[in-house]
Length: 303
Image (cartoon, rainbow, N blue to C red; front, side, top):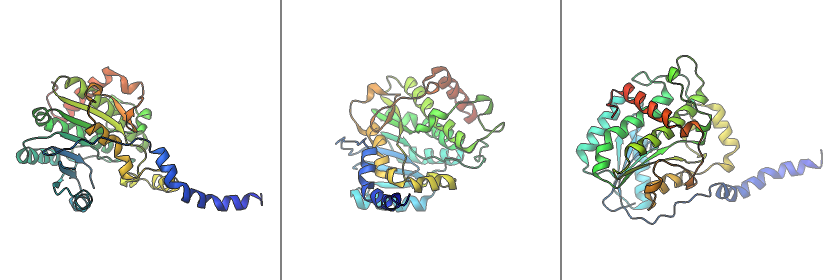
C-alpha cells in the first residue's frame, strides 16, 4: 500500500500533462471544410466566417460578449445578437417575425440551445421544460423559418441531440411529465425527440433543397450542467476528457458546411461521421406521430 502512494500522488500530475493529448484523442472528429460563405446567412440558437451570423439567445448581454469575441477572433463583423427565449412561444414567434422582416435569405439554421436535468418546471406555455425547450421550441422555430429556408435553398438544418437519446423514450401519455418525472430521463427523452424530428423533417423536405441532420457534439465544457450539482461535479472530475466548445462544435460545422452531404439528409452524426442510433430513434411511426402531436400542441398545421 505504501508503495502505491507515490504512484497515486503522481497520477494528477500525469493527467495534467497528458490532458491535451487525451482530449485530442477523444475529439477525433474535425470539420475540414474550406467552404467560404460570402453573402450567406446563418442562425445559431443558444450562442451565449464570411457569413452573416445571428446568435439567437435568451441572455442578450452574454450573447453580445460572445459576438464581440467571435468578431475579434474571426474578423467577421457581421455577427448579430437577437433575443430568443425557447421556453416562450411568443418570444420564438417575435424572433422569427423580426428575422423574416430583416433578412431575405436563410441558408443555415443550427438548433443548438438546450437545458439539462432541470427540476420539474414548465415553460410559459405549460410544456415540461426539457421537451418544451429542447424539442418544441426548436420545432416551432424551424417551422416558422422553413419557407425562408426553402426560398434560400440549398440550405441546411442542424439539430444538436446527444448520445443520451439511447436512454430516451417518447411516452405520448406522459409527454409533459405530469404522471411521472425524472430530470435525467426527461433530458434523454427530449434528445430522442430531436433525432425523430430531424428524420421526419428530412423526409418531408425531400426534393426541396433543404436538408436536415442531427448531431451528438460529445461531452462539452458548457453551461448545460448548471441545473445539477452532481453533473457539475462529474464534469469537474472528468475535465481532462471533456471537449472544449471549439471541439464540440466540429460535428455541427461539418453537417452545416461540408459539401456532398445532401444524400445523407436525416442521418445522425458524431465526430463528423454517421453514428448509430437507438431502435426507437429509427421508428418512422413514432417520428410521424411525434410530428403530429407537436403540431397540435403548438397550434400548427400538420401538413
